[in-house]
Image (cartoon, rainbow, N blue to C red; front, side):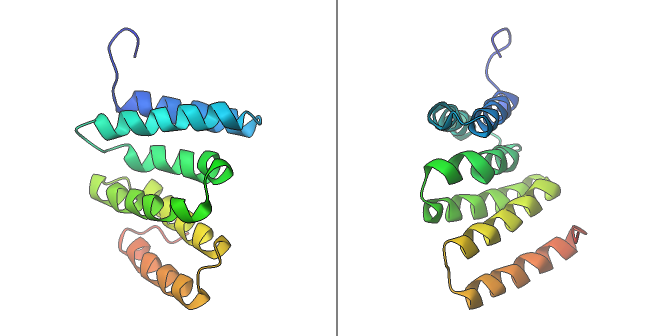
Length: 130
């Protein structure tokens, strides 16, 4: 990135670095670098890695520093963006993460169950059942 400029891989790199910082307990800097990664993604004309960046950030970093409820819509959006971009594996991971967060947020179980069924049907279409 220093030699050739900022690209989507730059955002992914900062997201991975943010996840590492979160893992070692530096939540403040993890949040800062995570937001930087999201800012880079928002400025990119393509969103091919949006799903991967979001999964890294929302599966650890932002769950520690944000309210879980505030993560739900973004994770679901990342799932849909991943499907559009053909990143089915990470789109499926975002779907699983969405259901996990929804359950932890004490969303009504009937709604979480319906989300699981709907997202499970999408996963089967893309052969991501495991």
